[in-house]
Length: 301
Image 1 (cartoon, rainbow, N blue to C red):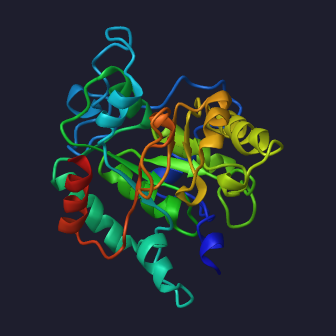
Image 2: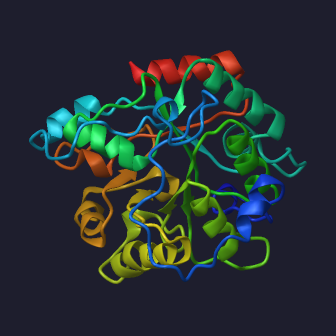
């Protein structure tokens, strides 16, 4: 399987354990919620408690909106991007092994190190409030995001996050929902009901830089509406396929209703629309626990 196809894999296996218990809680038909929990905690305190919430404490009306330059200066929350959480396979290329596949034991070691270093997971909404109003975040915030997944990613990644009272952001390509080996509506709703955030990864993982007038609605709007109906959340965060973007796409993202969008670390933030070009970093499977913490510290500086 080539690199581009493997990056399109998403949340494929059935949830088990703690995840499976949530999976039976709802269908995709309930009225949309206004948003998921603001953060998860690595402290062991119950999510939503004062010690764990890390949710913004500054009202959105208590300060004037930040300028693009102020937003860019505040954009220091490290955001890690994971793909498939599964054992290596003989067919995996070197690139796939390093940046697209995270063996479960390495994933657990990274999460333990992140939690042990005092980092607390936050959601895009909490990050947005901090960027635009200066709202407070935990002392050491981090976002953990998951673009693709197959086989045991929901079972493994979701369960490991739950054990540590962490939340994740799950960016989903919608065209394959329910196809054999791919994520189902029930799995998406289970993740959302557990307090995680559902975001869009376009309709079919088509490179945004190649879009024309006929692409904006299906890739941005249709994918958002589909995920909103399934998850019961207001889907307001977006991840660019391959981390790639161009300026032409940004007004269409805003029109579709996205408040944050994430590239990868290869380009500066757009000077006029920094909220739609926020940075993420691919999590490497060869990072040890101390190395992933060092990377987060570097990105936070």
